[in-house]
Length: 140
Image (cartoon, rainbow, N blue to C red):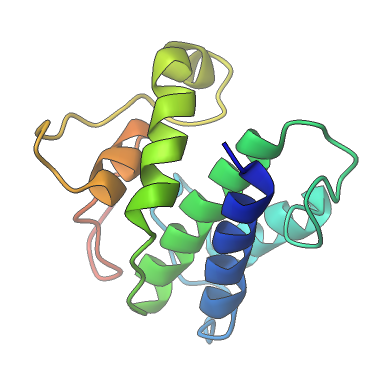
């Protein structure tokens, strides 16, 4: 798996979504975080600077974080985003076996059930405890 290339896709999606931010206090599907908290999280971790930008060696986790939070921003700003199937399927393959640990460590909320036939992006988003149908004007 070429994680550097996949990270590049996730980082490009993140940068694209940053351009749509207008309201730093807008709610996001990332739990209780609002937009500026989400942006601060990514910036403080150095995840969008370069692969391994925060000194971490866990490039798949950095890629997951960027991809999912790019989706969070897209929902908060009502800007369309479609992550590639290649990226989503690679992340699903890498993280589905560890979903219980991710929720246990509070890295993400417990998964949301979705159909096995759902799009790869929807399955990835649901794996991280987000409702793929979340909209900015929804309650949660």
